[in-house]
Amino acid sequence: MSADNVGGGYVTLDAWRPERVPRRSLRVAVRNVQGTVHLSLDDNEALALSESAAVVWRLLDGNRDATEIAEVLTEQFSVDAARALQDVCSLLEDFASRGIIQD
Image 1: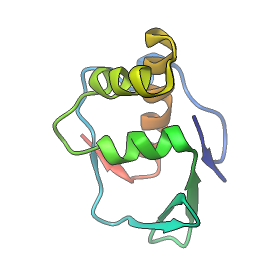
Image 2: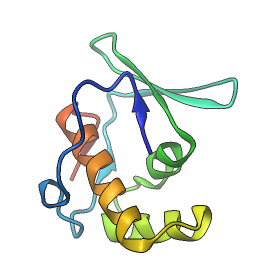
Image 3: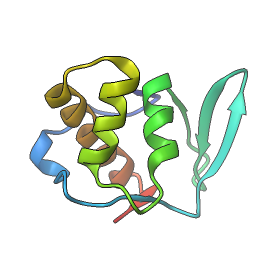
C-alpha cells in the first residue's frame, strides 16, 4: 500500500492507534486520472494512490476506525489481518502528517 511521492518512510503501528476514526479533510481535491486516484493538496503537492490506498481513502468517512478499514482490505486483497492493520495505520499516519485526514 502506498502513496507515491510520499516523503520519508512510514511509521510504526502505535503511531496511529487502530481505534481512532479518521475522516477526510475538506481541503483535499480528489481526481481520478486514468484509473489512478490522485489527491491534490492546497500546497501544490499531489499524491498518486496505489489501488489499496485508494480503497482506504474511499473508506475514510468518519464512521470506520482503522481496524474496520483493515478488515475490508483483508477481504478485498486476501492479505493477513495483522499486516493489513499495520499498513492501514502507517498510511493513516502519513495522511495525518500531511493534514489530509482528521480524527
